[in-house]
Amino acid sequence: MIPISKPFIGEAEKAAVLEVLESGMLAQGPRTAKLEEKWAAACGVKFAIATSSGTTALHIALLAHGIGPGAEVITTPFTFVASVNTILYVGARPVFVDIEAETFNINPDLIEAAITPATAAIMPVHLYGYPCDMAAILAIAARRNLVVIEDAAQAIGADYRGKRVGGFGTGCFSLYATKNVMSGEGGMITTDDETLARQCRLLRNHGMERRYYHDILGYNFRMTDLHAAIGLAQIARLEEFTAARRANAEYLTHGIESVVTPAVRPGYGHVWHQYTVRMDGGRDRDAAVKQLNAAGVGAGIFYPVPANRQRHLVEMGLGDADLPVAERLAQEVISLPVHPQLSQADLETIVNEVNRL
Image (tube, rainbow, N blue to C red; front, side, top):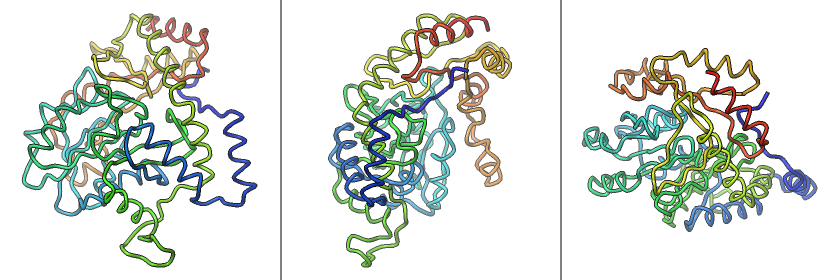
């Protein structure tokens, strides 16, 4: 089976973990600080704050911006549910805006109509590693005095008009084991705002700057040095990993003819966390996935149910949004292997089997 994802674990990752184990400094420490420095540089920002997961990064970012009960946050329904759950965690209300069929990302033309006096923030999600239209989103946010929190969980290294994602608003990333740069588990917040960075650090560590002196109500959302050591080995290869994903995606796009392949607009630097095609025209997507898996191609569906259709959101009265594009694409999408460890034979197999659909 050609896996849909395959974390790269080389000698550098193994040596880094062993070094931490032998040092005895396992919790958040110097390696975490070093990874924050490297991550900030990779995103072109001043500050990066490591957390225990991409979910806690989003949670902290919302809290740091003072978003809570009574507030609304505009976001996409076509995302992993953590994007939406974090809005609920802080007591705010997610407001869903439909997506663009071409990009799978939030449609900026529909955002303005969703804004109410309670709207506090826009949370665009750079889905599959494809940047959102940040010029349009930032223009709306500036005009309406809204916070922008970028869910860049899948998009480390992606750029929009030459600027890296995570540098437009408050960026939130995941270092989960399948991500383009991973640490097994972990998250990262990026910002140029020193005051916001300090607040994020307080929130992730029980409200402490000095040990046992607690300035605010905080959480235990720290990254360990064990995880950071893996992340440091990984981020050193960010450009290499990204180039391989882009080359693999180009090969797939040129070879696949039986389904709708993803297009990339000029000025958008896709990093291909997922290579996602569409079974349009009412064709049986689920049958196609079974056929690919039976042929040894590890295809997956990300995501089969829009967030507003998840049971807990329906029960909260948040499921009635009119989102026809997201509803349709949730029934059409198939993600194919695109990770850096694919061989030429793997790529040829993927193309051949997809063209049999």
